[in-house]
Length: 506
View (cartoon, helix red, strand yellow):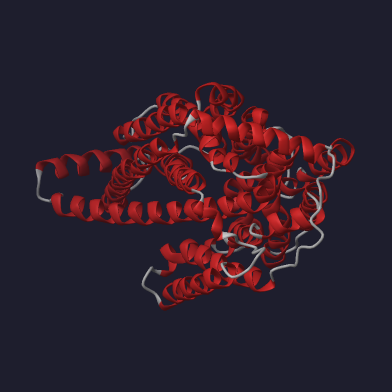
C-alpha cells in the first residue's frame, strides 16, 4: 500500500500540470517544478534509507516516512500559490523518496529467501497498478472535482497503510552502534541533486549553457570526492563496495538499461497520442492502462516462474519481448488506430513484467540481510538516475529529429508545384465553406500546411527515437547471460540464507 501510494501520486501529477498552470497562472517552466521538486527531494534522500532502517528499524522508518508523505499531501492540498505547492511537494518528496527502497528492503528482512521472488511479485503488483490508474484517475478528478483531490486522495490510503502496518508488521533488529555518515549524506545530495537537475533542465536551458555545464561539473567532482570519502568508511551511506559483487553489479546495470527502454513507451507514447492523435489526457490514460494491468498481472506469475526456472530464461524472454515490441512501434503513423497501439503495449507490458522484478532482485538475493538496506538504496538511486538520463536523452533525440524532419520537409515543398496548388485550393474552399472570406482563407493555407508538417515531423521523430530506445533492452540480454550461477553455489546460498532468516526471526 505504501508503494502504491508513492507511485500513484507521481503518476497523477503529469496529467494535471496544464490544469495547475491555469489555476495559478503559471508558466510551463515554473509549474514543472511541481514534478521536478518532488523528484529531486525523493532522489537525494534515497541513499539514507538503508542507514535509517538499520539504525531505527525497518518498521519504524517505513511508517514514519508514510506519515511524512501524508503530511506533505495535506499541505499540497491546501497550497495557495504555485510557490507554496512546489515547497510542499518537496516536503512530500522527502517522505515519498524513502517508501519504495525501504519497502523493498523490508521484504528481505521479513520473508525467507525461498519465498522472496513470490513476495516481490506480489509487491510489484502495487508498483504496476499505480501507474495504470494514475492518468485516468487524475483526468477524472481534475475534470469533475478539484485539483486538490489529487493530494487529498493520498490521506485515507496513507492512514490505512500506517494503521495496518502498525498492527501487522513486526520490527526488525536495530543496529544501535551505527554512526550517521554526515559527509557522505551531504555529498550524495549534491551529486544526485545537481545531476538530476541538469538532466531535467538540459533540454530547456541548452546542454552547453553555463548553468547546465556547471551542474554537471559540480556533480562529477562531487562524485569523485564521494567515492574517496565512502570507500574509507566502515558504514558509509553509499556503500560502493557492493559493486564488488559481480551479480549485484550486473543486476543493477541490466535493470537500469530496462528503465531507459521503458521510458520509450511511458514517456514518448503519451506525447504521440496527445500531440499527434489529439487524445485528451484521460483518453491517453485509458489507452495506456492495459499495458500496466498486464505488467501487474505478470508480477506474481513471474515470482513463481523465477523460483522454478531462474532469472536468465525469464530475463532473456522478457527483454526480447520488450526490445521487439518497442522496435515494432517504429511503424506508427498519424492514422495508426489506438487499439493497435494498446494491443502492442500490452505485449510489451508482459515482457516488462517477466523481467523487471527478477533482474532487480537477482543481485539482492546474493547479499546477506544486514546489507540489504544499503543495497536497496544504492540500486534505487542508480535506477532513478538512469530513468532521468533516459528521459533526457530521448527528449533531446526526439527534439533534434523533429527539427531535422521539419527542415527537410520545408526544403522539399515547392509553392510552384501542382501538388501545392491542389492543396491550396482544397484548404481555401474548406475555409470558405465554413464562412471565412477569401482573403483570410488564402492566408490560412500556410498555417494549415505548417501544422501538418509539424505533426508528421513529430511522428517520424518519435518513431526514430523509439527504435533507439529499444537498444538498451538488447544490451541487457547480453548482461543477463552473465547472471548464470552454479547450482551447487546457489543451493549452498539458499541454505545459509534460510539459517540466517531463522536467526533473525528468533
